[in-house]
Image (cartoon, one colour):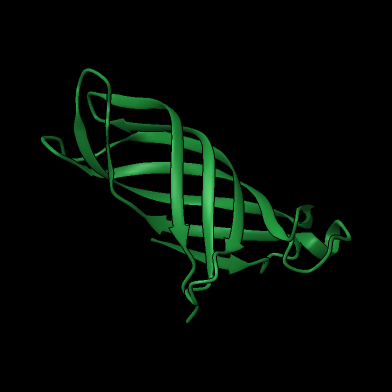
Amino acid sequence: MDFVLNDFIGVESMLNLPKDTIQYRLGAGFYQGGSSNLFKAIPLYAGGIINFGKGWLGGAEVYATGGINQVVYCEGYSSGRVGGDAYIGVRTDLGFGMGKTGFELGYSIVRAEKTSAKGAAFSLSQEVTF
């Protein structure tokens, strides 16, 4: 689950970018992976999103996102080390009345205390507005 915040620092105005181009994300998730050492972990995330706009894929919103993660709990271990991720994504309304759905493809590294997992990753997200 991620919380997405608008540019409260003012980077958009400093770079003369359109509103909602830059966003920040904070969140937590659940990860299960690893090729030889299967493990389950709960990482905390901090990162950013760069929105490229709707003109790229027939009205779908294209964006890039990335950041760092820190495992706070791993099955069999207490914590982990810093990892990271980078994704390119598409956000679109599928027409089910649920809002925008995101599809991301990228590379992720999640590091537990004694084991880690890294490689290509796919993410599916559903936007919920409060």
